[in-house]
Every structure is written in C-alpha cells, then in structure tokens.
Image (cartoon, rainbow, N blue to C red; front, side, top):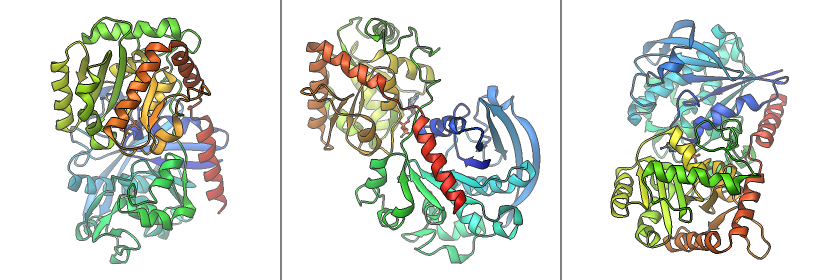
Amino acid sequence: MKNILFVASESTPFIKTGGLADVVGSLPKCFDKEKYDCRVILPKYMCMSEEWKSKMNYVTHFYMDLGWRSQYVGVLEMQYDGVQFYFIDNEYYFSGSKPYGNIYQDIEKFAFFSKAALSALPSIGFRPDIVHCHDWQTGLIPVMLKDKFPENEFYRGIKSVITIHNLKFQGVWDVKTVRDLTGLPSYYFTPDKLEAYGDANYLKGGIVYADAVTTVSDTYAEEIKTPFYGERLDGLMRARSNSLRGIVNGIDYDVWNPDTDPLIDHHYNAKNFRKEKIKNKRALQRELGLEQNDSRFMVGIVSRLTDQKGFDLIAHMMDEMCQNDIQIVVLGTGDEKYENMFRHFAWKYQGKVSANIFYSEALSHKVYAACDAFLMPSLFEPCGLSQIISLRYGTVPIVRETGGLKDTVQPYNQYESTGTGFSFANYNAHEMYYTIQHAMEVYHSKKREWNKLIDRGMAMDYSWNSSARKYEEMYDWLAGC
Ligand code: ADP
C-alpha cells in the first residue's frame, strides 16, 4: 500500500474557482484502493458553504512557527465519496469572502497552509510516501520537504510531485518578505532555486525541488518549454524536461452524465440524444428568454472571463456572429471589460444573446446539455475541462488548437467523416469566425454529419480511467527511486 497526500487550495464539492477543483475533487477516488491510500488536505475557508462546514469533525490543533510568528493550526476531517479529506483551520488566514484575495495576502496564506499541511501529518497519523502538490499555492512544500522537515525522522524520504495546472500563476513576491515568512535561509533565494527575476517564486521552488513535475496535457507540457507559453520559466521547463510529463485531465463521469444529471431538465444518452437533447435547448431558451426556435445554432460559453480564454477574439467578432442564425449563451465572471461586453451584446441582440454574469453550477450543467456547440478559442489552455464536458454532453466543441484543447478535440474532416469538433490554429479572430461558420454550415445543412460528430464525441472516454493509471505508474516509479 502506498500513501499519497494531495495538498491543494481548492476541491469540489467544497470550494471551486476553476478546473483545479474538479481535478482534486475527482482524481483521488479513481486510484486503485487496494494499492493506494490517497487523502487530501485543503484549507478550511470561511466562505465554504455551511452544508460542508457543519459536517467536518475536529481532529486536533497545535501552534506552529511561521517565520517569527506562532500561528494556530486547527485540523478537521471528513470522509466524502470514499476519500478522506482534512481541512486546515485558521481564521486569520482563511476568513476572506473568496479563497484568493490580494496576492500579498495569498503569499502569506499559502506559506502558512503549506507548512501547516506538512506539520499536521504526525498528529493525523498519516505518513505519505508521496506528497502531490498542485499549483503555486503548494509550491513551497517540495522546498520545505528538502529543508528543515527531514530533521524529523517522520518526514525523511517523503517524495514530492507538483502538477502545474496553469503556469501563468506563479506566486511571486519580494525575497525579503518571503524569507521572513517562511524562515527559509538565504541559500534558497538564488536564481537556480526559489528566485526568478529578482523575486521569490513559489511555483519555481516547487518545480526545482519536486521529484517529478507534471502538467495537465501533453501539448501543454511541450508548449511551456517555449518562450510564448513558458511565462518566463521556459528555460526551467527545458532544464526539467526529463522529469516533466503531461497527463491529460479527466472528468468525473458520475457528476457529468447527461443520462442521470439531476441538474438538467431532460436526460439523454449516446443513443437517444437525437430526440431528447433538444428538449434541454427548448427549456434553456425559455428560462433565459431567448427566441423559442429549435433550429437556432446555440453556442455555449462557460468560463472565467479572462484574456486567457480568447475573449478578445470573441469581442471582435460578436457583431458579425450575431448576423447569423445563432444564439449565444454565456455563463461566467471575471474581467469587468468582458462582463460588460457580454451585457452590452445581450442588450443589443435580445433573444439572441444571453449574458449570465455569475457563477452557477446548476446553470452550467444546463448550458452544456442545451447547446449545439461550445466555444473555447483560448490563447493558451493547459488542459481545459469545459470542452471535455461538452463532448460528454453531445455539445460540439469549437476550439483553438492549443494545449489540452488540441489533445482532446479531433478536428472534423468532412472527407473521411472523422473528428469530434471544430478547431483553428492561429490566434486570429477571423480564423475563429470562419471555423464557427463552418460548424454552423454543417449543423444547418448536413444534419446527419453533425449527428455523427456528436456520436463520435460522446463515444470518447475522458473519464479518469486511463489518466489515473498514469499517475499510479508515476507514484510507483517515484516510490522505487
Ligand atoms: P480553468 O480551470 O482555466 O478555469 P477549465 O476549463 O479547466 O478552466 O475549468 C473550468 C471549470 O469551471 C469547468 O468545470 C466550468 O464548467 C466551470 N466554470 C467556469 N465558470 C463557471 C461559472 N460561471 N459557473 C459555473 N461553472 C463555471
């Protein structure tokens, strides 16, 4: 039996701001339970819903040094869906209305969380063989595991992995503050270790010190070795390329299943979608005040509204797009300029564009179920889950060929009748528009071909089955090192 510990800043169903939460919430239960005891440590955010907080059980508490401070660490626990979760409690750090706030607060918050997660292990009575860290928030853990912790017998020999879900976010702050906070000696703050371009960089520390580094698709693993996608760490990614691998994300097939999904109005599957899926479209048209018309090409967007996701291309083409026989449904929050852009077009094209500028799990399921196509023209995309969910819901993805989008969506080939979606290569608004038009043309005038695209998409397997085995192989390899 190998003990694996996930340490992460978010996880479904407790707290979610993006795809990271989906991964942490769904991967641990997919490991072979006979061979791996995988547990998860999260912060106990005050903003978690009462439903979850009330079910957590107190385990222990202690005081921990953090630089010159001594801080309270509470530990709570809860079993969920067969997985043991632990929560680190500290009201000073985790009382915000959102998991993340200002970066200077987050820098201290996650230095605390990383050290607290490791410090809590002896009192929990769980000694991991491997600590699996996720993103910059836990980047200090591989560093700490190499620093003071090995002085204690308990920690000696623990291996670490870091998974990069998004290289753009690195956790950067000035060296002096981070040195004070963490108590790490100056030795670590050099450009071959924690420092990058004069500042302390948590993610870099994790990448340098972890025994293995993974990211969430093969293509992204290659892309981040280049300056365009490397976010100024491409040199480091090239240097670590022997220890870097891409393992594509899966989705939770129990949660995302159009045949059983309690959040959608009409269930359907790969056999009956031709008749049943459209009922969801009708229901959503009614709910959102869109024109009631079966033949409108309904395009969905469920996303953080940021530059990464290609919204400047969409902004550029919205007027043109709306000249077509189309409906556009947006669900998302993020940059004000994009929130207002969609509000504007919803006002300008009433009945055609619906802008839902908020976060809603329930509405997201309805959008995936109702739409004909899903638009995701990302500038970069480490993996992307929305296009995978779309495939599962018979909603044809229209994507740019980058990162995980390239790895999970096969472009439609009309001559060979292959492919599961539509894609374009260059980050160019007109290329995106022509691709949407092509999809629209197939939808309107070659319905059989369109339905076959859906057949092929729904037949793809992006459950965790094969990717969980790849993580297991990596754990076995690491444990044997
Ligand atoms: P990222 O992690 O970069 O935000 P992903 O595609 O990997 O992008 O994951 C995004 C996840 O967040 C998907 O599960 C998507 O459905 C969900 N999501 C994004 N915005 C919203 C929203 N406003 N309401 C509900 N779910 C959302």
